[in-house]
Length: 235
Image (tube, rainbow, N blue to C red):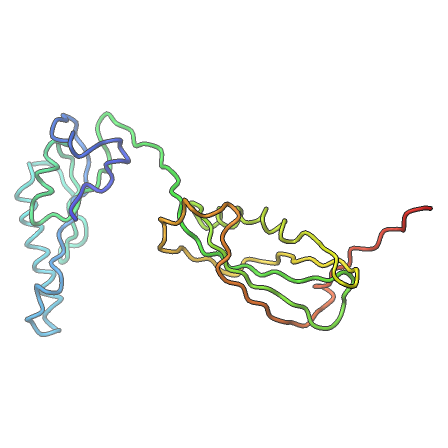
């Protein structure tokens, strides 16, 4: 859908543009013809035909713009748009042109862009934990790989947000033999932005576990947990 893509960045609404006297530096993106426009031609001819259609769109757009200094976006052979200083009130009409796909405001006379608001995204974070038993030095050690969904503006914020919950997850407890056991966070393994932004506002701060898998590995001295036993209480 055609639109002026970043109006909210400037605190503007589409309904007020035609009443404004300001000038703006804008990028006008050319409409892309699409493969259907050249499907009837042999494959070797299609790219050349697409480039020719883009040049035709560029000429149509340039002819519709008022005189002024402008910069071509893209190349002469395959233009992508025009950058020019234009009256804001003209933008809605330009957006209706068949040659135009979208408009981006780079500068608006008399206005400053609003500070960006951190948008919460949904992240899938994979982390590994070692099941450590007090004083165990040999044999096999269980490791757990957990996958959690967490809402955060970026990947690093998602990782840091999980750390307090990981510290709680590692709280030691006594096993049947009286030894301390803890599920100790080792490292982040992977992260991926999930196309489920609508979930972001519903996820708990500590993340939502969606998958867990345990494996075994050889226990080494570097992986052992040797907290040291305190002296028994007197009396």
